[in-house]
Length: 147
Ligand code: THU
Image (tube, rainbow, N blue to C red):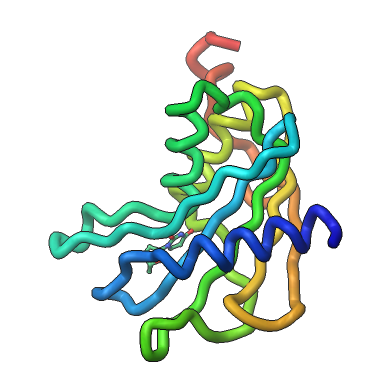
């Protein structure tokens, strides 16, 4: 399997654990790390809707908690509406605006323009972007005089 397909498969597996009873939209994210390992996350909703956490942010916070925020190379993201608890649909899902900013933190710290593979819960359609395409002119550490 290609790296891309491995990440999509890992993200789909992660999405199976999404806690998304309010939106009925499950998202999974998988980070490829410099050592070849994969860190995953899924969305984690809350009855107080606005407190919900996105899959990408959960995965990146996990990498950070492992001391590996600087080691993210590529990301796979998948999502889809849940039907009978199972994510469905083949339209690619990309990271929301907030997640793009969170991904940018890892990109800046690691010095990489992270590759992001976006897919649906099912199917073979994958859209691949560099973070710089999804978040041009990003605000980052340099704006604070820190890079
Ligand atoms: N969601 C993510 O996990 N990542 C994104 O980039 C987009 C949105 C989640 C948040 C919420 O739990 C559900 O998808 C519907 O917005």
